[in-house]
Image (cartoon, rainbow, N blue to C red; front, side, top):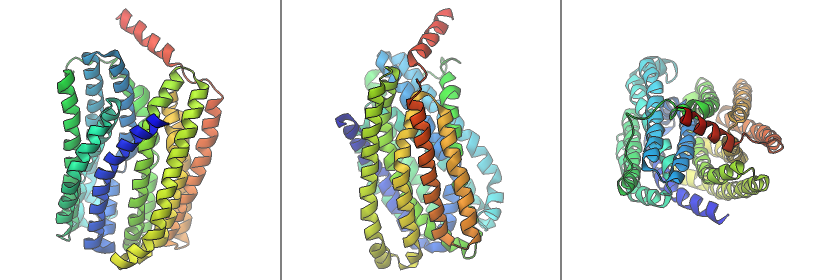
Length: 441
């Protein structure tokens, strides 16, 4: 528990600095743009991250796993190979998603955003795909290298600059300017964190291995990274489609703005839950590899208690203060209070699933991730469709999120209990097969 809290604590400080500065910048964008234009900005942001968010997080978890395994060997060459595979996977995946986004930007601007003049902004948002993948893998590598404290310090130093960049861009009162400021802020966060990885490579003489990595080194990508990423791909498209449905309802643009303000807070809470879950992943992986059933159960119980309790405390504070803050500083967003409260409640329900997802990753069972996320996607789209037919607006969509999150929690609870009664795939046998394969080569 002490290890979990320490690692998660430093990770939370780093996340709070980088994500917190970006979140404050988004609040400034919402203030200067107003609900209608902020709704357009949110659609562009969500479209850019349509496939990348959960796919990138899955690659980040893969990077943690292979980097930690290489670190145990104390072999700089093998560690260099792990870093090369991690960053290489991020570059390839980002290219796969950037090209279609660039090609479809005019169509997305007219059909999704309802403004052909925003096609340039949709095209520029492809840079968010690149920074999203690179930052997620970078965070996974930093966690495995035990450089979370240094990363947190780097984020604390750069956080004021990130906020000022976004504030300056938002003050221009244009969607394009706001997006440019957000892209620049994300790029600065990546560059500041990369200095931590670069310093580690220099101190331990870890080389890049771009020319010498073989097919077997990349095998982890399609054995674990891609199946886990596919599970993540089921979630965000349903979120995007639900927002598109809201945007096409009566008063849809302003409704998207009101909904997006609460959804930004929900996203921040889910990132926090992910920080704790990522800190628990090495503990779960170690217990699974030892076939330590009691260790797995203990790590899950304590990490679920920590993530749920922390999220609930934050939610209570925000839910109480939000109505007064919005009424005082952003009266134009008065319609966002009730959706915000429902979205915060859905974040509490979602928090335990973050640990159950890491348990599935530690077990090497991407099928559990696929099933749980598929349940969320189907229920969200069905509930959102009903809400739009009832003209429930932003509040109806927020309630749909709560329903989908609750049913997803039930699905993951059932699948996790089932997996606890079954032996996980043996890590030892897998490593033995790998060693035998290398010897044969």
